Image (cartoon, rainbow, N blue to C red; front, side, top):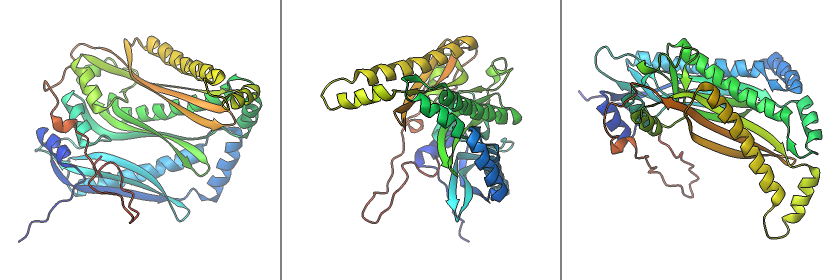
Length: 377
């Protein structure tokens, strides 16, 4: 009798890392849900979009769709009797006017008595988390659907005539990002975690609105009990970064985010346009973007000081052109401080936990557009 081979999305490096932690690959698990917002929900959301801010109907529909798909993936994992689901990915697809929510992950099995878990990070990142003392519990996510709105748009449009920050836009963008983070942390608390690690953020377009989506791995670290009294701590550091900071004795406190929307102004915009015809520095644009960065950095620095952080690591800044001489400056980083008892299990990471897997498909005239990451993560 032939053995039934098991499929896995894990790469050779990921399988090696999981073996070091006592797990073997055990198939691919999938869950999906197709959702329709319905006529009434669409009408309510359209009217809500005139005001600006969160669109509760859309937020709720997307959240429920993801919850249903995730629950089906977990149910399949239980049927397959796997202990963990690694490299969980979440997709939102348009299908015949409706929306399909899809969750995919690679199952792994451990020894007797192993607690079940799901992980947002791939197996290489999961190895780093586990070696740094972070016991994975659950894939968690937080989202918010939002619109700047017609009222905010009119006020903001008038303010684009003047150079400087447009607080109406900044307030909407800041509020939405923090709402998504709060919901992510609430989800982690509900599953008994005291931290969320490996947080990844994306902004998606949905039904004419924007959705801010954050996902990560809810985990438990015994040394973070005091740090997480108010709420689970959060971090967007990669697995390797988190392992390195743990080896140095640091613990994450909170993922910090800040954004500002700035306008160059009508006069400044015209002047900059004329200046761009001549070779040399554009002074207005240089000064504006410098001021905008300083603004978001000051907000992050202020929040970090309130939390008692020693450093904010891994700060990343992004600039997005919103049109009409508007730009958004977005900054994100993780506040950390030294904490007694933070240490790693092994003195050095194996090469297999660091090497990034390469694609073996080559694009050609056939029109294939292969993803840069393997299915397992």
